[in-house]
Image 1 (cartoon, rainbow, N blue to C red):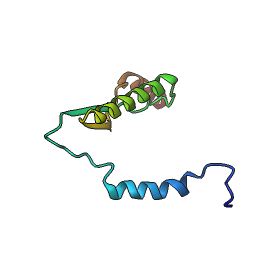
Image 2 (image 1 turned 135 degrees about the vertical axis):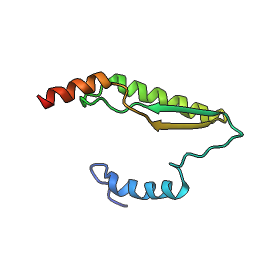
Image 3 (image 1 turned 135 degrees about the horizontal axis):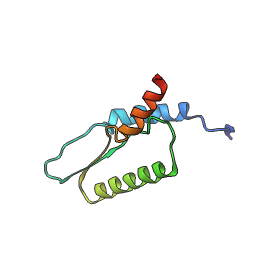
Amino acid sequence: MAEITKSYEPGEVEKAWYAAWLQAGAFDGKVDPSRPAYCIAIPPPNVTGVLTMGHVLNNTLQDILTRRARLEGKGALWIPGTDHGGGAGTAQIQANAA
C-alpha cells in the first residue's frame, strides 16, 4: 500500500490538474451567441489585506450563482474584477507614504 503523506502537498497534485485544465481550455472565455450571457465580477481583496467571513460568504454566493447559471444553460463567466474599495485603499497608501 502506498504511504500517505502527513500533509497535503498541493504542488504535486495541482501541477497535473492545472496542465490538464490549460490543455482543455478551462480558463478560456468562450462566447456562444446562442446562449444568454451571465457574468459576475469578483472584487479583489482589500488593500488592507484583512479578509473576513463576509469575503468568504460573498465568494461562496458568487460561485453558487455562477454554477447555477451554467446549469441553466447560460454562458456563465466568473472573472476577476476591478477595485471596489478605493477609499480604504487610498487611506492605506497615504498612511504608508507618510
